Length: 399
Image (cartoon, rainbow, N blue to C red; front, side):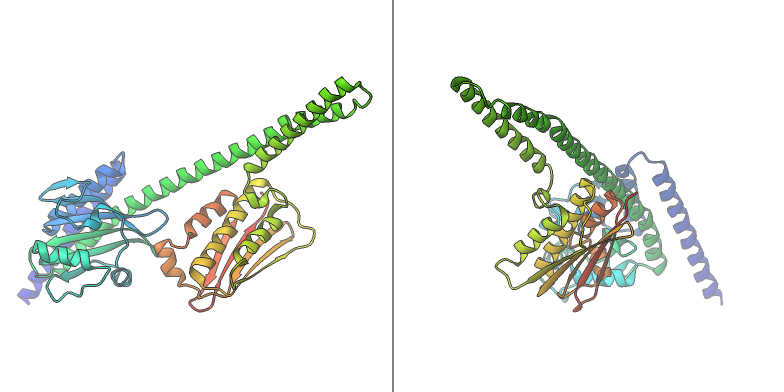
């Protein structure tokens, strides 16, 4: 009974310490002016309170899951750079071991791993495993920083003892990781918002230039051409000058029209979205065994240029995915307009994929497609299962 009371007291003490540390981290996150200072303090706190020799923090890419070292804490000191004797992969972006990621995602908490010569060495783990053995590490603790099914970062800690940390300390470490996860996600969202804003501003400027060229320069050339066409009864010399001016005006008009066209995707220059997508499909099917088909509503109504541009790029990305990853035998695109709503369906009969895994890794350009859909207030949904193909459904309604 007395032993049980002591254990409960220790557990209460550890929980109180965890709560205090978590509260301190959240206060720091709320009060800091930037991400860097908070992550530095949080990683140092994690390293010192767990007794780790070193702690490493990696950020996942905004549009993929490749990891990049952004902080290292050791002996109470912080650095944004890897140590000289760290593995080569720490000096660049790298892919996380898929099996380790699967374990961490399933586990949802910190994983303690003893380091010894019996550890399996694979192509994905050879650098880190050999580094652990060379440096004499006895154990490590790793944790995938997740927001829902999406990975935003990774933490690894090194220890000079093989004895596992008490469960309360591991829980404490897990709690300290939560504000770090939040900080990484907030920074990611801020970057994406800025990027989307910049993309919107660029597209608006391109459309403005296109309108100015079309409404101004091109119309001026056209007016000159019409005026020159009326001078049919002039003398031979004057007629020669008029002919020369007419040729120049026609050339200028053609150049202006080419400039307008250059500001839009090549596939949309002449025939709008249906024609552009038909050309895309013809390109993808040429020289391959993939059958591509387009079904479009009769009497297609042209959409605003910005909307067609983004829908075209999303279809292009979906076709790229089907070609690179799906091993599809056929790809079908359906365009329809009804009751004011425009829908685009891209379907293939390829190998499909695990939606949760792909969203977690942010692969296949899904985030880029999602961003483009958001820029025009469109909805985009994916439906896919391994072995059952993939469908991408876009829907847009005028504001």
